[in-house]
Length: 115
Image (tube, rainbow, N blue to C red; front, side):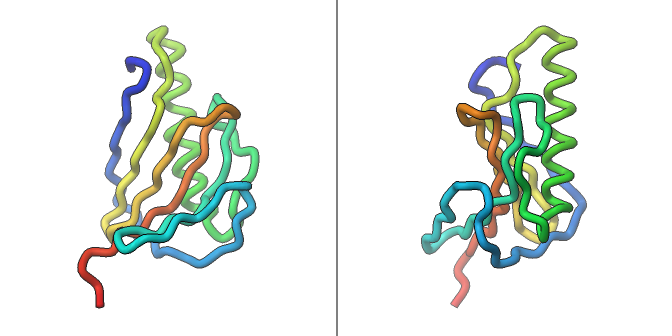
């Protein structure tokens, strides 16, 4: 995949968003459209460095996606992804962004017109 390319994946998993303390050293962002909760930090090969225990299912999915990308990137001699978005049927997503240490993943709940 070319450098800077973002990838979107759809999952059949049914995830709910859970409140949590952040253990990743990253901040949660709140606005009117979405809530982000840190899932974990991963190294450049996709191995977990730090994970939120109560979001272990999402961390496992993230690990699998990053590991697969690392294997394919190496086999095809291409750059790893810069970002990844994994959608669930319940409307939540796992957003993965590259940083200087590897990757950081967030569980994202989108709010659409809730009152």
